[in-house]
Amino acid sequence: MISLVPDLRRPLLKPPPRDPLPFLPRPGPRREPGSSFDYIGTAHFTGRSIYDAIQAASSGLHSGVAIELDRARYDGLNRMGYSVGPQLRARAEGEFVAATDAFGNRDGDIWLLDWSIDQIDRRVRMTLTPQELWRWRSVSSDLFPYEVRGARLWEAGMKDEALRYLDFTARTMREYFPSLYRVLIIERNLLMAARLMEVETQLADPQARVLVLMGMAHIEGVRELLREPEGVSEGFDRYGLNYSSPIRIRRARVN
Image (cartoon, rainbow, N blue to C red; front, side):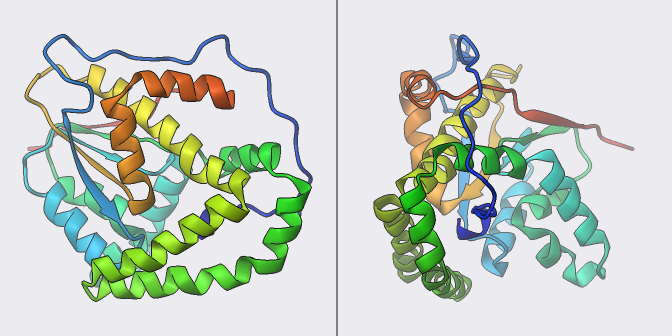
């Protein structure tokens, strides 16, 4: 989460004009909202998360994979993976792209759920207060070791212990940097939940399932929003968000 905080030396911004209404897709009559998804929460770039993602994506149980990336990060991580040897590729590209590779040679879709880094940057600089900006410059370096320690524990298979460290950074951000927490967690949860709702409307087969991969900090919030989809529309209104559709990358089996 800390890695997504933009360069806060740049000036703060005013919010953009609002679209009249956010898109609020509705699932088909035979489908409960969010019932088409299997979720995996990850600690980014850890070997354990990469392994879990590859195992799930290669299972053959899913018609698509939805991931917490935008197109620029997806393409960049793909290039990173091809710049190293095959044995290091999954580690270089991370769990999200590794999962799309493991999805394999079959018909299906890759769905990209997140904002771009530039969009996250703009949202942060539209909401951040001068007091938070000063505070972040003073203490942000103290938070990073907690994320590193959490990732190491996750890697060692001690997920409960890891979550205590990873949750500490989230709680600290929520308490001392509420604008950062709002954009990096709350608003992105709303966006990814709304985009998953649209993904669900695109599934022709009522039995189809989609694998959803995102960081542990997002999983419960997104699932809760999908259980109560009215909260997505309310959240878009509350925070003045503009909706845009997920990016869809079609996969076709090659014989």
